[in-house]
Image 1 (tube, rainbow, N blue to C red):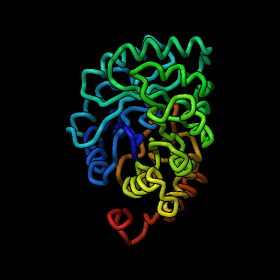
Image 2 (image 1 turned 90 degrees about the vertical axis):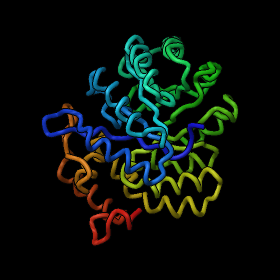
Image 3 (image 1 turned 135 degrees about the vertical axis):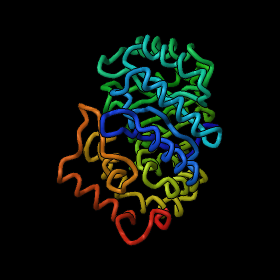
Length: 300
């Protein structure tokens, strides 16, 4: 089951703009150590829009090899071009991934028919399970529950990453798609309530920084333990907010660089956060227990 606490992993870059595979290995080990259920490789947080297709495939390949069966790997395979999404899916399917995350085509705002045809073609490119990814705040296109239900009839489409932050969609999606259709939150600030309402997990940006606490919160929420879920989520709350003060993954990469885990390198058009936002992110790290005398092991 592709459920639980999943990290939308960042892609680290060297100072000259290449993928830093040494740091990628360290990040994969970090999530293996702290019990993350799955890594989402080269999604939006992994800066998929700025990687060319060869780099995209190479990062997924490296992540699978580094994971070595110890943690599941879901690969981003989305594009605003159906042809490109199909090609990516075909190239990645042979690498040993456990499934795909396919973002709604962005910018071109496809019609209902266009979305149906897009996902039909991409899902037919591989027998591996695929998650739909609805994030209208970034794509300009909202995949409504009625359309999701129609797409769910495809046996390769097993679930959705729902990033609207609208918790009430859980009940509607369950009613239309059935309880076997996997519902993953894509919105950290509302993820706890999403899972308490019946969701099956989260694909999280915050998990890049606090994977163990996120895992504990997810497990508690998925078993319906509100008190424990709220207790763990309280430790994450400041980060949930600060990591979206600018476009993702700008804040999370800056936070990881501030802690010395990666280099503060982005690819244009992404740039480092504004100074006033750096202060907000730094305060969130302090609220989470970092930037003190304690080590990250003590925090997690």
